[in-house]
Amino acid sequence: MLNLIEGLMYEAGQLFLAPVLLAIAVVFLYAFHALGAFMLQAVQRRSGRPGGFELEEARRRDPGLGAAALEALAVKRLEPVRLAARVAPMLGLVATMIPMGPALRALGEGQVAEVSRSLSVAFSAVILALLAAALSFAVATVRRRWYAQDLAVIEAGTGLPAQAGGVVERAS
View 1 (cartoon, one colour):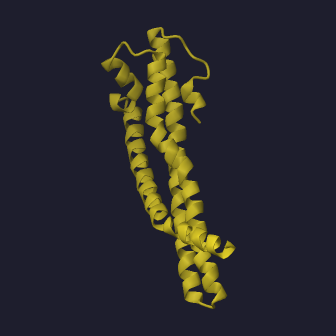
View 2: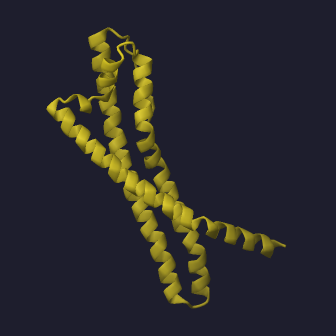
View 3: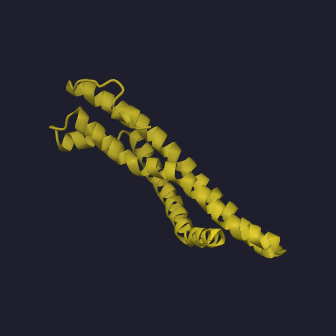
């Protein structure tokens, strides 16, 4: 009975390799997309263009937006990149562990080529996942500071009540 459960767990775990690798590929591509958007926004901010100041632009479009609505908008804009930064390492760990089962089996059977293939998949996946996490984390960290600064400027310029330790600061 125990062998049956072990075998089923092994097979179930192996089913997740392709979806996890696909998820890592998507998060990796998203991280570079986020980095590109971040760099464009950085250039816009340096030149003083409105596109670089999302919260001010939202406030100009809808002057009725209060501090809480602007903070909610900032958190909403940060969610995808923060999620990528936090999920990518977990996906990398899963993608490392799944191929270890076949690698260990192949090692026990003396199939060195299969061990090498499985370990290559494992290490490549974790490398891409960690790179995606690092890029996403850097983008999220700087954007969080930008949003906090923008909120402070908007609140000071429009008379909105300042909220110490607001949602943007707590969103880490």
